[in-house]
Image (tube, rainbow, N blue to C red; front, top):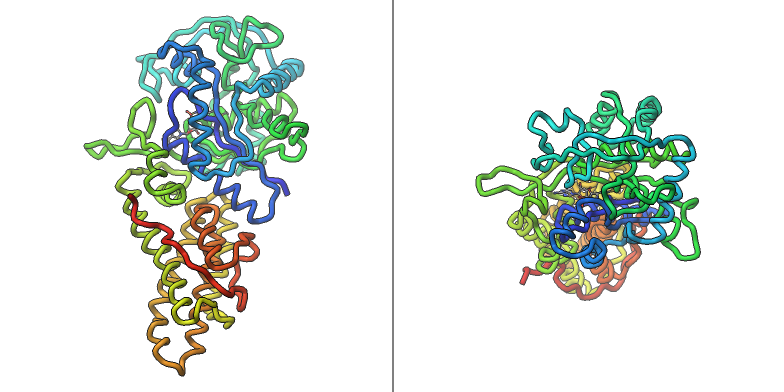
Length: 504
Ligand code: MSP
């Protein structure tokens, strides 16, 4: 079966921060897990390069928008290998093929009768690149998100007749209660729709940095409409000479942050309905990474507030796996959560170096010392096997429900279980008594196989370290169906460098 997962595409008006990395890591965990299940996976991420935020940032820096995006987009492209993210394509919305395909779909929406000409008069936030209703603007006309003064705009626009889709959208939410996940975000989107939809601007005539409207070149498309289409356009040109649309559209998951819910849960399905294209299966909404200030108050990590953690610095110091693990472990997926450099260092030591790293090095050292480097072909302990063998199915079910941190916890329970097993069985005591050689065989086989199974299950979160561990165990296959304890699967093992060494 095909499985298509996307992240939001990131604005390139500043360098990427951990909030951007977070979403990309989440999508990568899903993509890698689905590949382990043998699915035909396509994973898309990229950059959103048009619109007012980019035009304003370029103006401030005294460069052209194109110069700005060409300078900044590589920072996002470079972040992917640094996070060991396995995206199948990286879209830039200034790609000519994206622009042409977006024009094609938007023209189709017009041909289907959902576009009309009018005048927009109202509030606008240049940072959100979003038009605000009077209710959102409040009495003091400020952006509720950025707390900056909104501008009053009056300009000729083409409009998308969003209000005509109100009933169709309600029907969608009735028929597919998991269209938006988790449930509380679905309710939020639904009440937005029920409160009454207004038509929205599809084009801007006062901006030039954007994709030209093909039927009226004095306008460019409003950036959100063109940007949302990236999920669809990318498939048409990601592989030169092949169109992947039939193979992967509609997407299974669009992963986004809660601030852009309206665009993905309301505008996007309405646009696809207007173009008569199939809708994605799920919009999966995560919370924000927050940072505490010196008084302990939590704020969204954001470039405009300047309270950001730099994923490049963090991966330099601790490695990509550690950062991936930390992000997925520290914050319950779907909710907001605070992160910090100190919290990261603490989890690195207690969970990665101690719980997993020591378990791996101890197990390998004991097989080397007591059995000359060969895992005995004994049957694993049945009680232990029952617990460890449950991991793969449990993790798969949790991932299907998009509970990425719950799935990691389910895997981690098995890491703790194996650590308890070492203490309970005390192989170092068994090794002193020749009469208990068969018991020692069983314990070492159980530990080695258990470790192999856990490494397979944990692979999507920590591909590099689990890969190293599996290589040392002489069993590199990461297919999830092999994540069951069996006798005699392992043989000779090899040296393992410390998986999580003390940071430099
Ligand atoms: N360009 C638009 C998205 C267009 S999608 C068709 C955009 N870009 S963004 O760069 O501002 O944000 C990209 C993603 O990063 C969003 O999903 C946003 O929620 C997420 N995050 C940005 N800061 C974040 C945190 N502090 N924490 C978690 N995610 C955050 O919006």
